[in-house]
Length: 306
Image 1 (cartoon, rainbow, N blue to C red):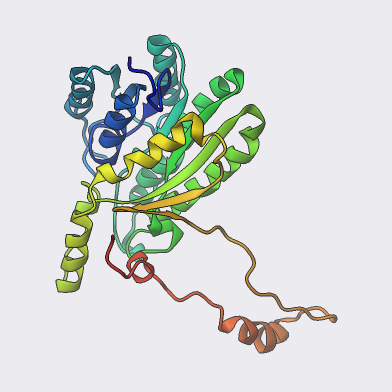
Image 2 (cartoon, rainbow, N blue to C red):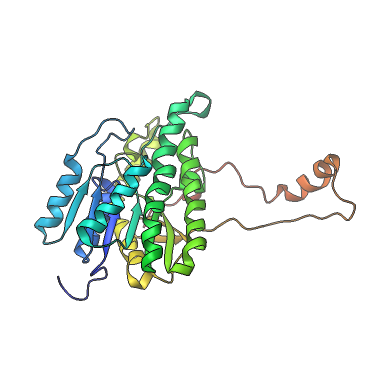
C-alpha cells in the first residue's frame, strides 16, 4: 500500500456502489487506500429484482487496480442486513471507518396518483436504509472513538421538484437524520454530513422528456458525470475531514456548494397576542414579501454548470 494516500488504513462501506455515483466513490476511495465493502442489491432504478453482477464488477475493478474490496448484495431496507454489512466489514477488514449511504430508488408519480407502495418503497430504501446502516455502524464508531457518515440528499428535498413527494420527503428526512447523528455522536469523534449530487445516473435517466426545455435540461445533466461527486466524499472520509460535521454540500460538475439550513428570516410581534384575524391582517402581509415561491431545483440552479 502506497504512503500518503488520504484513506490509507481506512475501511469504507458504500451502499448502492454497483453503478453510478456509488461505483465512482468506491473506486476513488480504494485508489486512495481504503478497503471497500461494495454493497449493491442490483435492482432496477425502481427497486425491482436483484443482480450480483454490478457489485462484483466494481470489486474486480478495484482488485485489478491493486486495491482491496469485497461485495455485499443485501438490501439496505432491512435492519438485520445493515447489521450484517457492518459485521462483514469488521470480519473481513478488521474494522470500519466510513459509511456512505448512497443506495436509492425512484418511484416518481404526481402526488394525487401516488400509491402507498410508491411511498413505502422509496422511504424504506432512502430514509430507513440510511438509518439501518448508520445505526449498525454507530455502536462500532462509538467504541473506537471515531467514524464518518456520508449521506446522500437531493435538491428535490432541499428545494423541490414535481412528482417526487416520496423521494423529496425521504431526502429531506436524511438531512434531519444526518444533523441528529452529528449532534448525538460528536462526543465520540464521529462526523456526519450530507451531499446533494448533480450527476447523470440511471435514476436521473428516468426523467420524462416532455418538451425541448426538458430535453435541454437533461442534456446538461448528462455532462455531469458521477465521478465528479467522489472527490468530496473522499475528502470528508479522510482525517482532514474530522472537523467538518453537520453540513450539507452540493456538487454540480466542477462546483461545490455549501447549502443553507433553516433559520428564522422574519418575525412579527404583538403585545396583545394573536388571534386568527390578526394573523390574516398583520402577520401574512408582513411575511408576504419573504415567502418562498414554488421553486424547483432548476429554478434555483438556473445557470449552466461550470
